[in-house]
Amino acid sequence: MEDHPRDRTCTPPGKAPCPGSIRSVPPRGCWPSHPAADAAHTVRRTTITADKALSWAYTEEFVAEDAATTDARLRAEELGVVPVPPGTGAALRVLAAASRARSVAEIGTGTGVSGLWLLGGMAPGGVLTTIDVESEHQHAARAAFAAAGVRPARTRLIAGHALDVLPRLADAAYDLVLVDGDPAEAHEDVDQAVSLLRPGGILAVNAALWHDRVADPARRDDATVAARELGKRVRDDDRLVSALLPTGDGLLVAVRR
Image (tube, rainbow, N blue to C red; front, side, top):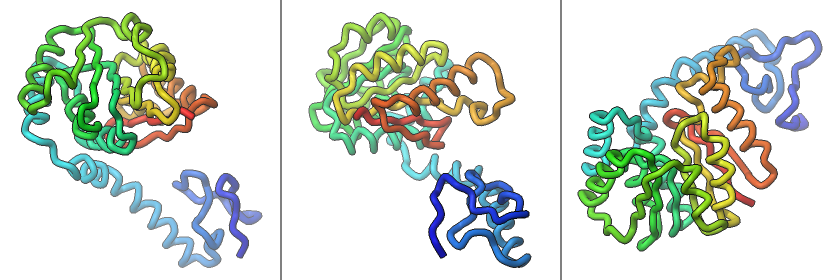
């Protein structure tokens, strides 16, 4: 049977689209041809939906954190900071390693959880520039970096608002930029972040699914709308090749062309 383009349905006349299908496109072979196959197809979709929470939990625990990162996470809880989940941290480490990142910028230092994951994937001698408006958070991050054995020369902590600091950084000089801040400012942060990236550099935006609200069109609070619109904006930016990963609270990633 001829393969169907992935963005088209292959529902035959008189058939409703497959329930639960992301694109309403059944597997190769087109629509099941008899009731038993129909039932099996529906069960498969239902099982995938029911097991999503279990799969998410499994992926979050798939790569264990080291002691220094766990301590930084506990400190974040004490200070009321929401650090990246372990699954997101592991993904960031992979992105840093894949790009052999030597120069990384981070918006939102927190207590150093995401910074430790990034440093774990960066090239030896690579430098992490991390920005946060809260000096107490950065004090905790410095302690976390020291506890992990990170040499001071590998981190540059800058206290201040991202929109004030980012314009002072060099354009096209960074291998990876992580945006992990206020959704209300994320649009402007991302605009600045893209200008910092070299060709082939990676943009990563944390909490892109915003507490699982982004996918629900009925959610219209300001933060959710901002996160939803930011995803669309990055997706439609001709300078970027993007994907939205469901790990953690959603990780929006893009590569600068």
